[in-house]
Length: 377
Image 1: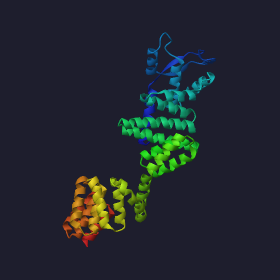
Image 2 (image 1 turned 90 degrees about the vertical axis):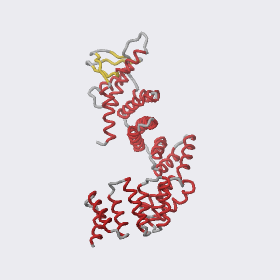
Image 3 (image 1 turned 180 degrees about the vertical axis):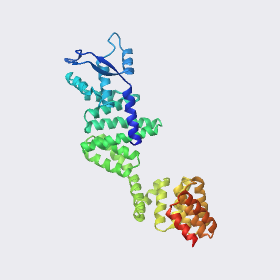
Image 4 (image 1 turned 60 degrees about the vertical axis):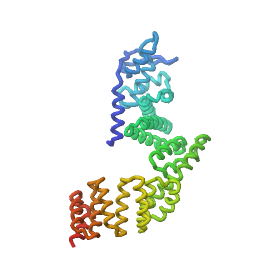
């Protein structure tokens, strides 16, 4: 079980444990409007005690336990423990009372305050457990999304991530049931944008534009797509660089520098592309600019050091690798790189020391072993 699943398991178990039960005697009747349900046997019904106490506090001379309290408890069971032994009887009760529990759940979700987001999640889960389809998946996903964004604003990043990931899962499920469900595309685009998956956000929102009939949402997402364009070019560009197609990557990345020159990661991938093309002097400039923006950016320090080696600047290279090792002292790769700089600079003993250290960190490292063999010749 992964951490997210464990979190939700514990979340729903905790909510389940908030319930207490009262027994309704055999033959007792419960009425709703013109309908009536009569128990065939003694029936334990769930109640949220805290909710009950709050309701009693707000009552005048009415009886303490109301049908609303019972319905709330049943919804909590449906949301937290769908395999509970009396669920079938609860469903029978709701059916005989002609109580549209699905509509009631949606009504309650829309009425919950922001501070009641956990209730909304339980109610949303109940809706999915009653019948999972595109609508229930969308509603539950939306409730989870709202909770995740609230927690993000409060700085609770771990819980926020769990809720947003689960929201994404159910919004994707929504499209499994109905691939023309425009609102799911609308929300999913924002999810992927927040997670810096710009290409996917672009694809999702482009599909949204084909399906939605709400003019305001269409205009909103059209503007989002315009603003997303440079981010999409950046993602496509760096993927091309990583796939060893540096020239194509540069075609997309270089035009972004004019407006986004403060993005250190943009400059980094441009530097990486030029290094792949063997244009080490240009690559150096970009990596140096990265370090002006992020002075301890480890990958830039390493790449700049490699460029220095390729240009025969071995002392400068070893100094850069030393700086990096002060930040990341257990990095086998960097010890290997510094060993190469020492070796090319004729400092064989220092190179051997670095390789010995690298092999202590990772005795099976193939690069370290090959450098050791070279030093032993």
